Image 1 (cartoon, rainbow, N blue to C red):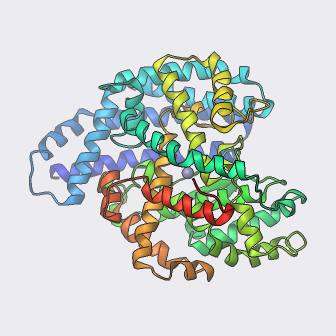
Image 2: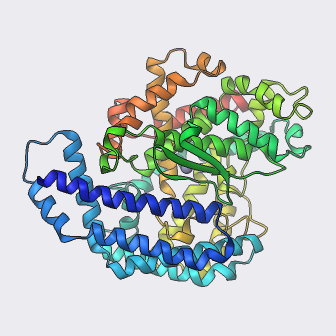
Image 3: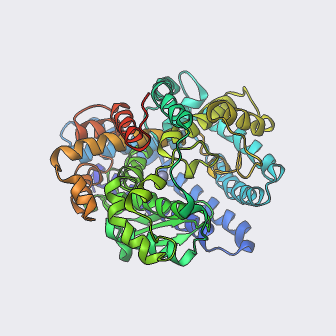
Length: 500
Ligand code: ZN
């Protein structure tokens, strides 16, 4: 066997182990009986340790050393070697014992977070979070960094991302988006939400609506599943087995539909990965920012457009005939685009969403740097919400305990959500140039052409290119906030008649 084939065979083993880990994680969130928690922590720890041992095998280092001297590789081969080098370096910097301990602690602290959130009691989660922050700082030290500890963690989710790159991005959004939000609040205008707020929305109607929309957009349910879980996510193991979840609320039917469209976007990306590259690093979806661009595309750019609401109105009427009587497509469009500072990130509107992310980013930066500690966290959280959104959480469930991310140590993850918003606007702007009938297609529920464009320019390209290079290849220009800002300005103007 030549060096390249041997490398691919070893990477396939590692990929299979991680697929099994993904299924165990999905089961833990969706199906597992409570008593199995301790056992599951052992299982996941074993899986994680086994994968890590295989990734850190010195033979992989030898093979990479040999392959890196070759100059005759095509873009896929070169991509596989580059990505394997990145994984090998990251893995060899983390001691095997540390990786096993971290995985075990992730399972434990996800369970205490779930209980703390349900009981609105931060103290239940406190000790596990202290240990998780400590382990994350340790992890950053093992990985190494040039400027800030937090940079080492940002790089895990989007290759090359640093505080120096993210800070100006948020500064730019604050400059352009914050005044827009203020203009809307100052206008005192609020769409008529009575049809939403005065009804109790049954779960079965919401399920039917979510399922129909997901299927029509193009999610293949013979290669995937929809379930319910506390925190919506998309997982699974391979394009043939993609699993997403949502949650239902009697008072807010938009949460489940738009949550479903979000996770469907992630799922479509997974299902569209290049099948000739199964088990290879280049066959995987690209960085988290690109992944989030696909969920945001369907959730917001498509799902919250006027044309989509016109198409979806009959589906709403079918699922909830009595509640939708007298509600027009325009009423629905205005209601799904309510701009209003609120406490819950996943339910935030497009205009305020990035302020939620900015708060988490600022808190994480300080926490990892040791400028604040876990005991300062609830207060710091509430103060920043007051400063940036003008509201304060009445309890921790609606405040600092709302997100699952910190319970598994995903510090550095949140900023990729904002990258996703920027990329999604930039990608749609590019797609529109070759799809002049885009708006009409949305009005008719013809989602195929847009999906085909994303399949060709994003999904099928896997991880062959680095994230920023992929965006540039697909759109013709490097990542920039301009398309997103222009999109939001135009929309706020049409909805509220205000500008800033
Ligand atoms: Zn997402």
